[in-house]
Length: 148
Image 1 (cartoon, rainbow, N blue to C red):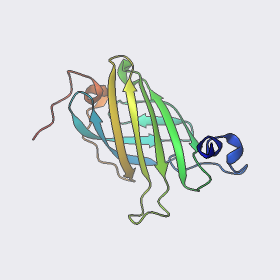
Image 2: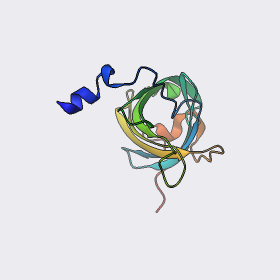
Image 3: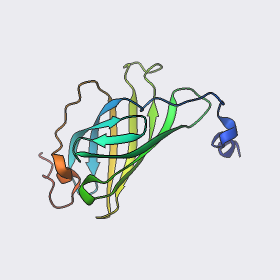
Image 4: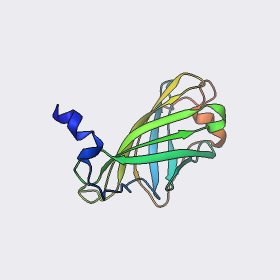
């Protein structure tokens, strides 16, 4: 019962405007359901998520997850060259963290190919990316295998 109460809109402060992912860039590690791992850059604005490896953007949003400040949920939908990626995740503000960087984690599905992705990363002003543009890293059968 208390978990359900924690997720209801009444549990959020009226003035809480989540801004953990908004207007920030994250260096993320992406692990795919088809056996590849790569780094990419997720760039959030107030209303969009841009993914460097996809070369395009889509709508995104963020909501508070609890009465604790600095914890939010985020989601985004990026076309990624027709792969139709849908992301949902959590974010934690840097303030209470020892490493001093905002963190995100999440999962995604690629609706067109039935693929799945796990993403995790930290806030980064200069984001290095190993992802190939045009969504090739996100495409089953076209991504380079993981080097061991």
